[in-house]
Length: 71
Image (cartoon, rainbow, N blue to C red; front, side, top):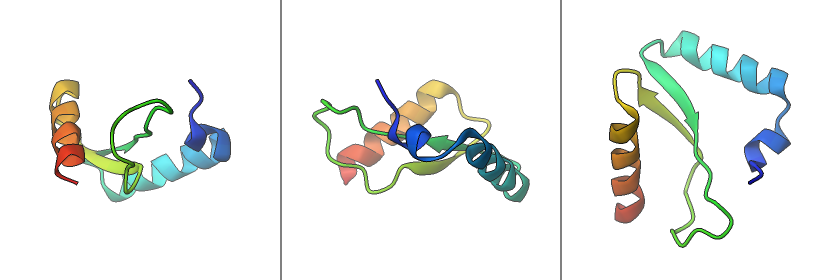
């Protein structure tokens, strides 16, 4: 699977952007979320999210899943 954001933005840009966000929001983790090409979920309104660093992966997935279902 190819990631569109990764293809559109070079590594140095993504690294610099991530560092800037982590400096501004030290208690958050920047996450890029993209829909798989054949996924049967609605289109996402955005693909950049700030997730609290104390959440587990399953909590993040649960919150994102409920967000997609609500939209």
